[in-house]
Image (cartoon, rainbow, N blue to C red; front, side):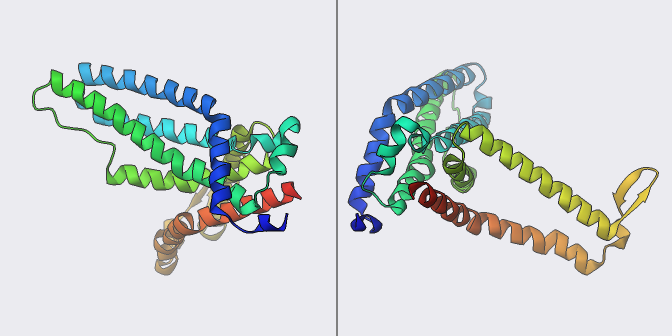
Length: 254
């Protein structure tokens, strides 16, 4: 249908609703299980060691990151299953709507719901802490650090969204393995380039001599390149992987 090439918010809403209802039971079980585990841990910590409650924030966000990456990696499972792929690919929606629905569910709604669940868990734990400890401070997951972590999640989950399209099985593990391999190759390449430009070889092996680095080159490595890397990560990573995912969806739909 030609009209499918036009972005429709109504069709987007219907597609999101379809995704939520078709996977709602498994999502609720997963969220309930993880939330229950975190609540038990938080209550025990609040009761026996209230001062350590704030340290559980790292555990909350670790669960959110891992759970979100797994959820993202499986968002296009229907497309890779022989029994369901035809019905999924022939839905009267455009590629833009498929991508928007997947990204809104995994990159926007998931972290919002996770943050609200974490806030509820912390609230219950703090109530117990305030009942057992006089004048105990109120801990919260809403902080500048938490918002920064949410931003990092939104950016990095786009890599797993791409993996959800290109890998047909074990999407999460294959995407993780691909990231490890790429990171390893980049680290080796960077190390070899640095050694080739400023290094030397002796009985102790390869090492980089800081005396060989000029002030301009030192500023390049300590200032310009880190700033460029932050700019690329903050502003280009998400658009790049969303566009690449779009082309992957287009290839599958054709």
